[in-house]
Length: 388
Ligand code: NZQ
Ligand code: ZN
Image (cartoon, rainbow, N blue to C red; front, side):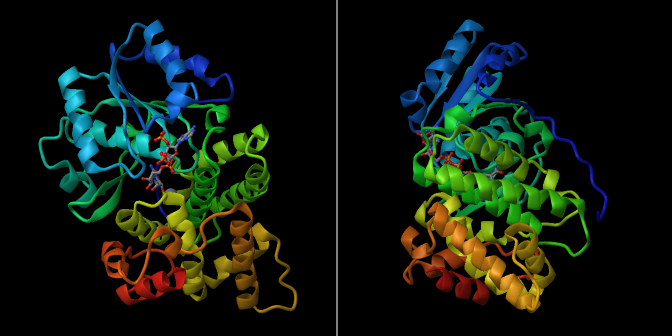
């Protein structure tokens, strides 16, 4: 293990088919006004909205309706939420949805009473809240981002020309999260497999960094193997509870700060994915899927030892009689086959990336000086062209 770190994750999780029975108890710990934030209406169709509202009424809460959080939530929407919080003196933001709704809730929490320009302060300058914040709780309905147990809040600001992530500290993690795998059964196949790839990407972003022997690598390999196994089952039969439940739990552990302990992290695939998301508004997990293979093939030589380890420990590639490069390439081919098997987007052109907007995408990519290789802007163009 490298470096010094503090591990503290304050989110309380309730997992399983009966998880909602804990919501009433949790709500008792907060004041009377609850802002119910949700997306474009899926929760009204599948009954989750009614179930949550029933508990809010039972516990005597005043409900402030906050619908319409879009995938890739915008800063404009965050500002609307801030008005609602201030006007109604909201005591708790209850986010019911996927990563977009939970990310949005954290953004509103940190920004509602911020006296500065919140975009500049948090997402551009990566500063910390110095104002009052509002407690966030969540009921997860779509698996992938890990937002249910972390401080991440990814916001799109088209006026500024960026989709940026801010990782807030534990004070802004959801205080509690309800994880009922049944709630995810109505997620459309495209979104579901996008979420599966998002999980894999979170694991790879943290795995492909550092050189030391590290317990965290063994944890990541175990989670990858579980994900690969269960995703194969769920892609064929989305109603398989066991597979969906395993994936839900894996997603939470893939990005709740545990796996960054003792390791650095790369996160360049996410930066390129965010730039594609900004320009095309494509589904997050699919943006990552479309650029991962070209990216990893590009940096493979720089982190060859880890790509060899990935091939052998995750995919079971036999190294006998092969060069390290052959083994590493075989690992990436296994990744490619799995991606095709579960049905993710393999080309960024399918998401709308073309020669016409290539410059706009490239300009929006944040280049991070971590991982095995710090890209140049020309290399970003090269990777994007290969991804089309
Ligand atoms: O809006 P509704 O109607 O709810 O429909 C949503 C949305 O269209 C639908 N959906 C969710 N649960 C459903 C359902 N449809 C039917 N049944 C259900 N049970 O799924 C669609 C996508 O939802 P969204 O919340 O956008 O998906 P996801 O969870 O993938 O979140 C994506 C956002 O999270 C950010 C991404 O960048 C993107 O903005 N991320 C957040 C991270 C974090 N907080 O740490 C890390 C990630 O890397 C990621 O960047
Ligand atoms: Zn992600």
